[in-house]
Image (tube, rainbow, N blue to C red; front, side, top):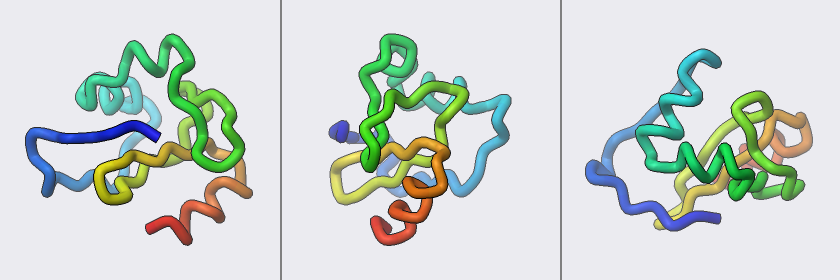
Length: 80
């Protein structure tokens, strides 16, 4: 889990094209963390990459990242 204090706390991203995932991490200031393998799936603890990124959910001041595995995506539905 990463702490998140965005400049615009009301900004919501509902969907993103695969080709823009890198830009999402860059905008969030997490590009280096993704490249270095520091971001883990909240459920299975697998390293999140641009290829297996499934979703990110803000839970209070924390960001929960999820990989694209069905089990992790199902768990995500209960985390909102």
